[in-house]
Image (cartoon, rainbow, N blue to C red; front, side, top):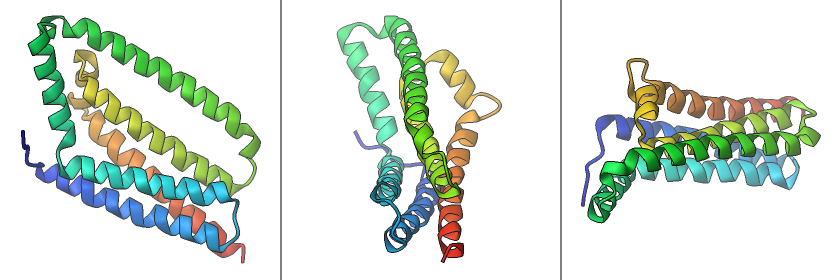
Length: 181
């Protein structure tokens, strides 16, 4: 099954590649400025995430995965009961996101000193939010769809907002490193 990407998907992928440039620059700059190794690794990890998100959009993988999941449910006769599965999965995603967010915040409390660390942690949190957003779009449960695709288009705001947050954090990080020379 081949699905052509929409114009919005192509624009989103191009924007993701701008974010890749910003976080890649932050990673390179972190290495050159002698920052802790985890800084460089985290920035390059975010760059890899955004490359994957760009490919996800351009190759229309989200639509393909969703169609495959629907076909699988129809083939097994479980499509009519999908709402019960979807509600469990959506609830599990919310619970896992809460646990992961709390655990990350608890672990990060030791690194909460300094603006560079805060910028990086904010970028990582926004990257995690994007992963959660993609997972929610895959679940495609009624109340999730109503929030994401309803009149407010929270999907767009979340996707663009989280991407911009990562990019701004990277630019802020690079500026902090330049000013500390």
